[in-house]
Length: 384
Image 1 (cartoon, rainbow, N blue to C red):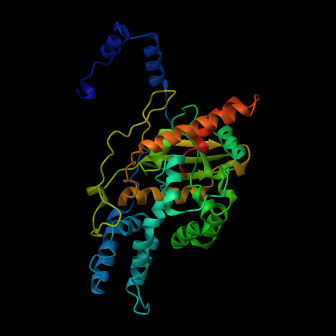
Image 2 (image 1 turned 30 degrees about the vertical axis):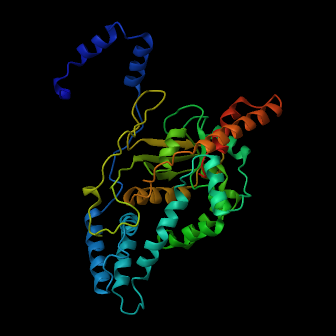
């Protein structure tokens, strides 16, 4: 393609307008594209202060080697954690590794390397259908979950988000959880996740998150968003993250970020001095457009969620946890697990369950709101 300076824009638009295959709908789409003014801010790097961080992680690596640890616990997940946490906390960790009064200054690194994979597994559910979840339970003998999702709260979220995806404005979105619904089903596991992140967030924020994410309060608009099903699937792979910016009584502002991949795997040994920007690369085939304007969804896109009642707005602490975890997952490869192909008998069983659900809804009678027809997507989705 010629450089933008060399393009004759008038000639280009004229040829498009007069082409025999161009329809009135095409012309209207072009007008919408050109008239749209997306709400965007500067796309800043999502890993900050890289030079200072790498200087600290290099020193941490040197100290670990002095203690006889030669890579065992220097994993991709530890590296990702150190690149995402606040810089002042990272500097504090470095000082602790040099403190002769601490019996085992490297204990935190061992614990993080061992427990972070469980954190990522909890945050990025890999099952995308009820039948896959059922098969998992049969294999592990895991008891049926008792927690039930609230149809009323899903509808409140759908109404708050104007029945459209908060990112693309597409209709018939799924209603999804920011922190996965598994928090209701396994509160002990969620508490373990939050305890691990307590040094990042402090006692007050950690206790607040425990109150929200280990009870029925998790299934509430404060932990829900309306999202296009495909975009939701990508979110479950940490293909993008939502950076919380600010909140007032009626509005929460988020910044959309496409996240890149390093090619690393969870558990892989990594030089802690590795610059992430030497590894990060775009994910092929991951693109999305605004359904109203046709404009591409780009990093820096500002999302505004409004509600008349402050309690119905997404919780900023949950969004902060999501943002940190998405970045860590993208760096260490936690979202790289591909979908498992379904077995033929599982597909048949899933179809039978779908038919049974359809008959059940028919028997419920008339008079239900038509807006509930996409609720199956919400109820029959993954754990998130």
